[in-house]
Image (cartoon, rainbow, N blue to C red; front, side, top):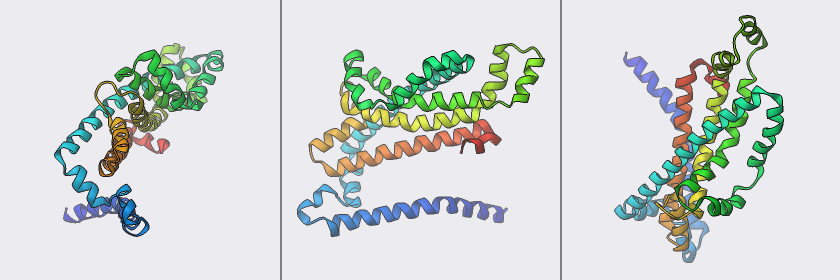
Length: 268
């Protein structure tokens, strides 16, 4: 029993070791830039890591402000992700249903991916206001394409023999879709969800920069700290935003393994 526990611990350390070493290297380079590369007059532009910790994370007011912003950004990101998943799956099902639907709709999905979102943000504000709903719209626009493309790929990955078997049984289109195609598409769908989750976080932060009404998110705090030249708080908010993206990506990776099981290798 002890041997198995120690072996499991070694495996966990083996997985966590390389990222921790990279993090230590980044912190070392950070200190090097702060104290060696930058002259003392410009050192405030890149405060040392311990300065960020003491002046931002250990300050109750700043910590609370960043925590509230993180919660607001997470709410926007997950709402936008949920909408993108529903719209993307339905869009892909419609395109898989008929070739003329794909010819009609897929170019617009590509256009959504190619148009710079920053160019659309002012228009979104004019059309939908500058509050929570507008932020969600930005998230959907950024996170939608991976759901559409991955779901469509998964729906078309069904083996020909399986389709012929369902046809011989006289299965209806609804049965083929729910019992065959969607099940076969699960690995691709979850891969799309994992990608879109990270993009939804990016969309929420981008929307925060432009839509300031309501509860300020991480993006609004980053903009505020930048305008006030509050470097420790700025670095802390950027770090928190990065950790949110990592947590979301990792969480949906674990959800993928739990939901699709042995199909997980197909999503890697």
